[in-house]
Image (cartoon, rainbow, N blue to C red; front, side, top):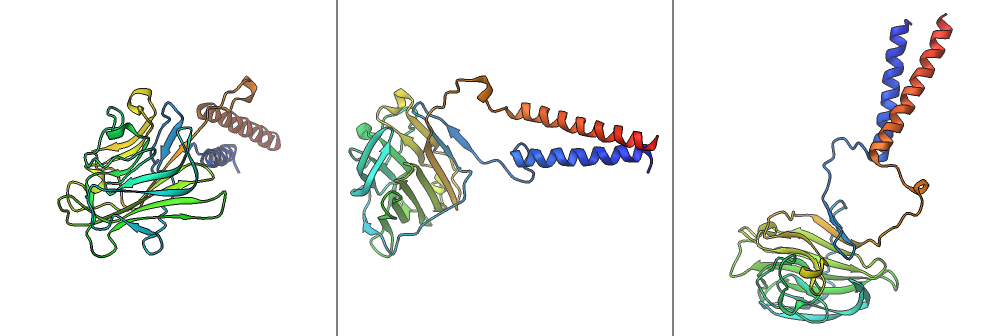
Length: 283
């Protein structure tokens, strides 16, 4: 084997090794579109749809409410303490219009921009798919709720099942929210959000969370407002992240750019050593 051929092989092997390390570190991810992540808000909530879609259908097991209604609400005991913006709640209200609220209710059918406007009552809220929805009196079209799981790992599910847009829409939509006891995370899952008109995919809806006076104190995290960006079979998870303070330069994790440089330097060093050894053998 000639010296040039050996160098070429070493170079290809080194680059392949570096590429594999980049992929393992998440610096390169060929063939995959990066999902969206937003936040954090002033309290520390972030949201991402970089998760697997999950939908736990409770339309045959949950408690049925709001069937045959429009612009009405119901309340339920969550079954555990759920911490939202630093306050524990064990009761929640939900409306036919795809909205959860704590410490009060809001039956207003007109959705609001959570970043600029206080909704009716100014309550802490989770806009699952806040729009003007209604439920026919027949079939399984209703809101369902249920607490599942064992103590310490329970989840409270609210499901808007086969809701129709007001005054009418060609197709029903189905979506749900899940409150988790162990993490206090919020999962929003959208099974079918194609209403067959301008309400499809959140086109007239608000999706996000807010605290009291959230439009003033920055305690709001809005995923979308009047924008058709919600997809069928999509889940969005809202999580609270407490700030982490590093007290030592030595404890800092290298940024991706630094890792690229270090790995490239290591690859060059490896290539140089191999070439030097091959040269010694040839001579």
